[in-house]
Structures are given as structure tokens and as C-alpha cells.
Length: 308
Image 1: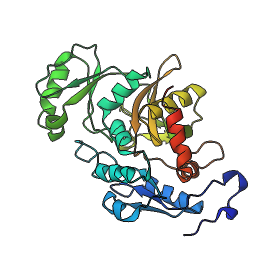
Image 2: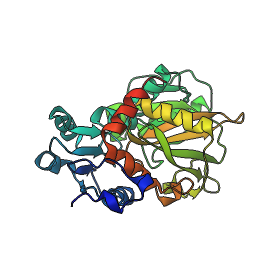
Image 3: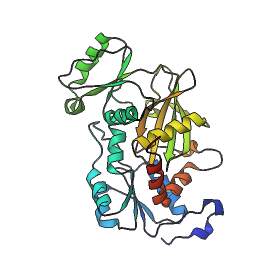
Image 4: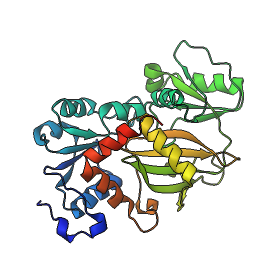
């Protein structure tokens, strides 16, 4: 597809890369498909491909966007990390590179990076196969290191409940490989805030509201969405969290505190989002496409934001 900048409004024009944009994902999702569509609307030759096809397609003038997610088995990242590494070593610009995706999806790495930069995050401990339960204040949350969709996440009100949950989880293959995280519970407010950060800027946001009787806000567990305009403080902490994992296009989940501050819960390198995330009069997919099409600009924003 030939680049056609002239048909875009002036305020939306970007420097179109001479090559293609390859969105690399282990499976097709609505967000990935819509992002490819938004890139094509900007005159960019964009395709959604599985990782195995990357080496035979991507060239030195192309841009690669990694959107590998967590394995359905919750024991690691989808296959394709090595393909992203090989592309980067060949000099291809990779947004959401392999190291960033691992830092996002491995919640222990996320916690360590956020802690190192002083970004608010729930106190986190790692419990392995032979590790005794930590001495922590209750309640706590148990979750897999590579978790998603709210699966195998447990709320423990006491040390006795924690031991019971650990016995229940020890037969899980993911637990035997990686242990489990024990996290301090941030008192549920009934909702959280998910922001889309692209190129060091917040380009989308939504509040996720927990289903009745549910303390988790995951849409997969019956939660719902409502539009929101994020506060300046929420925007700042989200961009710091994205920079902490070197993420170029990520979702940052924030938990509100009673005093109006926020705590970063997770950073997602393969974040799913919809048109509802759009802010003001700018479509969120077009905003992400603008950043990805700019390629090198996104990389510069990552480097500039790495030291909040």
C-alpha cells in the first residue's frame, strides 16, 4: 500500500515510514485488528502477523510493534520473544521490545522496576515451592507471576487462609514453575483506572467497574466500562510506570486511594482496549497509530521518560 499523507487532516499528518509496520501477536484480537486498520487509514502499510512470520517479512526500514500476551496457561509470555530479539539485533526498530514485554507480563519484574523508581505499587513478596508464607499484614492478594483475566487471583483475609490458598495452588503447573506473588491489598473502591500510554503520553483511558459482589474489576469477570477524563496526577504516574518497563504502547492499571492519589497495580504490554477509551475528540486507535507510525519518535519518548 502506498503512503498517502495528503488525504489526512493537517493536524493528523505524521512522517510515514518508508517501510511497513508489523504488529506481532500470538493471536488476533479486536484491539490489534483495529490498530492495524488505524495505521492503514494513515497511509501506512501495516499487517498483523504471528511471530514465526516476522523474520521472513520485516526489513531494516520497517517498524515492529510487539503485542505478545501471557500464555493461557499463566506460565510465561506467548511464543515469539526470540523473534523480537532477532529483529532488534538486525537493526529493525522494535516497539514494545522483548525485554519490555517480559517486564510487563512478569509481575515480579514489574514490582521491582516500579519500586526502584519509587513509583507507588502494592508491597509484593514472592513465594516459591519451598518458601514459607511471608510475615505480612492482612488481607493480601495471591496472583500468578504471569497472570491475566483475573484467573487464579485469591483474596486472603488471614494467614490461615493464605496457607489454604497456597496448598490449593501448589498443584498448578504455573506455580511449580514460578511460585506465586503475595501482594498487599489496596482497599477496593469498586473501580480502577486503565490508561493507554503511547510514546510517553496518555492517549486513552477508561474506568473499569467491578461487577456486583466482585472485588476485581476485570471485564472478563463481568466488570463494565465507563468513560473518564484522567486527572493530571493519573497521567503522570501512568507515564512513569510505562517508562519504568520501557513500554512504548502499554496499558497501566491504577488503583485510587481515598486521598486522591493512585497506586500502579499492573502494566500490560498487550493491552486490550476499545473506542470507549478515546479522550475528548481524538480516537484512541488513531492516536496509538500516530505514535507507532512515527516509530523513532516513540523510541525517543521511551528514552526521555526512563528517569522520572
